[in-house]
Length: 336
Image 1 (cartoon, rainbow, N blue to C red):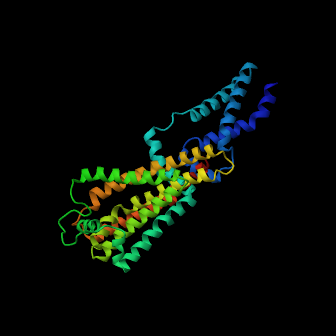
Image 2 (cartoon, rainbow, N blue to C red):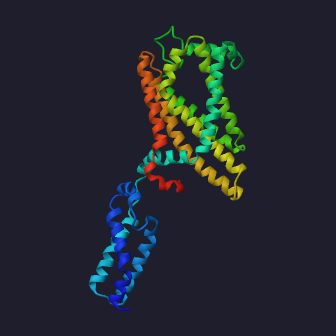
Image 3 (cartoon, helix red, strand yellow):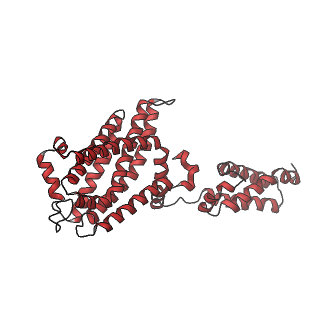
């Protein structure tokens, strides 16, 4: 084939390849922002176009085409190689990107299970709380008298000098205790989903009843102020993490019970993989909640308005993170 015909035939795809490199190859962040207005070569087609360009370069060299043609193809090949085979981001950066964007996208992708988990946890919590506030004697049907006295002692408003929500231990020791306690609850909520999802349902309802019962009893006996000041700070990451862990457990159970068109084992493996990714985010949330609980929530002298303001900010940030995080990378949802 003559050089003129070769160039005439392939010139449009070289131009498209070069335009993609100029417009979308410089910055991944800018490329994501401008993807809706881009009408050129599709990102997914780039690997195939790159291989085709390499073949064309080899042909041009073997046929002895002019340096103008081979050098242009060589330049395009090198630019494409530098982009497609560049060193991946370090692990810490990928971990941060997952927590900031990948995890919220994954939570939204499982919105059905998350909504069911939300209802299973919050509905019994609110119902039991309201019932005990209305009829305080109901708390004795949920807890032993010794447990009720312990709750009242931990949040005794007549003893403002002691730490809220604890009997003893340094902040660091309590941080380790809270991490272990929170992570065990989150893992148990997720793993119990293997029992066809029933285990996750039971754990969510049980946790909702217990938390609602404690809150209702303390409110009914006049210990509500120290209790709410204690839970205001860490409630957003902790309770939200429990709901997400429950949603991951329901997803796991659903994969087992209703595999759809997939083989049951493949469906279970896929559900387990997505559940494990969700648990990574849940773990980060629970560790953060334990940190706040150990070093902030237990401070008794802090004015209530500061505690509630910080709690409100954390609830707002948690909601914004889960609802908006990673929306500029919506095209990656399918692979999440």
